[in-house]
Amino acid sequence: MRSYFWQKRRIPLAWLLLSRQPLRLFVALAGICFAGILMFMQLGFRDGLFDASVTVHRKLDADLVLISPRSMSSISMTGFPRRRLIQAMAHEDVVGISPVNWNFLIWRNPETLSTRAILTLGFEPNDLLLKDPDFTSKSKTLTNFGRVLFDELSRNEFGPIKEWFKEGKVVETELSGKRVRVSGLISLGPNFGADGNLLTSRETYLDLIPNTSPGSIELGLIRLRPDSNKGMVAKSLTASLPLDVKVLTKEGFIEFEKNYWRSSTSIGFIFTLGAALGFVVGSVIVYQILYSDVSDHLPEYATLMAMGYRLETLLGVVCREGFLLAIMGYLPAYISGQLLYLLVRNSTKLPIYMDTQKSLLIFFLILFMCMASALFAMRRLIDADPAEIF
Image (cartoon, rainbow, N blue to C red):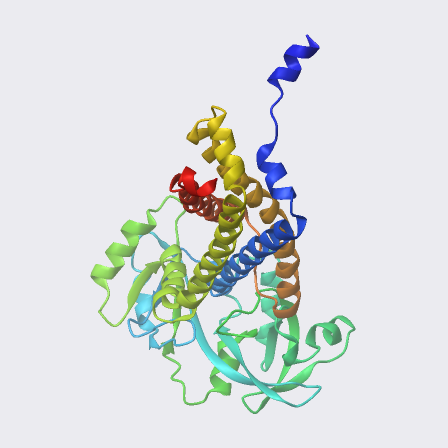
């Protein structure tokens, strides 16, 4: 019985070939790990860009959204007549509306007195705006003129507003050159277009920008009956409203913003290109390692073939080497990616996370990279002339 199991014992030839030269194995794993980290970071920044660009959009309490056809994105919103939103109330499925002003204003850091642009939304305090159970009580504080709600996830350049407010201090500063007081905190988060967010009443907003017409808004939120078909209502309103307004579902509004960053800017392309370059660099490193390994062991491979081993069996050894390199190179890349994502989140407050889809994508890219390199390295074995080997 013992002799039977000994005969059936398989020699881990692929692992023995890789571990025979530890320095070469370390260089290969370092190259794969570097390529994996580069792909993780590039795709993480790209996905973080798209997710961060719609942090406010996702939290809006709306089923449909009205915008101007001239609006390009959240960083370039154009006004349209407020009466279009009132006209939408005539539809039988519409149960509520909220007019919203949307623009960037200049915020003065109350500690350093430096200024910085902050995204400011103006709305009626008694209207629904965000899907937050505590938001109604916070928005009521905006009925007092000159009050604002500050996004506690804003970047530190706006000042220690969160800390001061929680300590019970009166937080006052200037917004567009006029005095305002922070009456509460909200949690929205910055994005690539805005480093911070601010909410205030339309009365205060119009006072901050006196040239804005009271009848003009940048965003119109529409709430429908629970049993309504959002797509059908959107088509109906599009047909009934003038061409100076565009009707989108909330999901369409989110996709509208993402599409701007995806197609109208070079940022998405740059991050994707960076991930592709990481893939190419890793492929070259793995190919060089496996090609050198095959070249160094050509006499041994030839001897095995002379002993009766088929070419397919030896090619399988090289493939297993590529598979082992992929597994051992992916694990440190994954761990490093998690740590770097945590560092970026803490430093920039951008929503960059390691999700299952991204993890599997990078794993299969690394696996394909290693297996493809192994296939190319096999050509050295296939094309070898036995006369030259010996």
